[in-house]
Image (cartoon, rainbow, N blue to C red; front, top):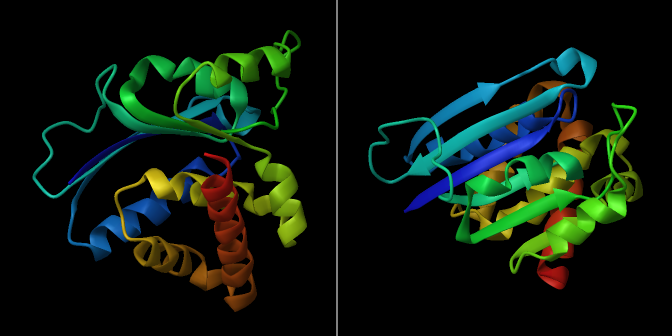
Length: 193
């Protein structure tokens, strides 16, 4: 078993929470895990990326080579394009369609999504809208994790447990809201891949 995952987005969008949940799930399955993070100017809406490698065998490097990622999970559409060179021929891109416009010359979202649609394996999801519909606008990252979950080689129930572990200190209501968002993202991916 091996999963090489690029998590991409903008500071404040919950990339590190996604990484923490997947890390907990991997540990529950007694798998090896390595992670490298680049925070950029995260407090100012700068780019954030995390290389997450999960395997049943020891992992030598925490960085993913170009053309070898099994999954790119991007919570921001323009950031999804930045990391496409890492995606393998058989890999999936799962991207949010809602932009985080943090620069004056942000490209047209439809042009970005046209590039995404050229891929043979992708899910483009309006995670912000789905999070709002589930009752927690801040849980779009868990919607994204749910949409990516069919392409991650971890047991679905272990990812749910990871969510419970990461959010349990915030109370059962927050855990439930995040699980609801996660399940909504999963349903979308299963219906739209």
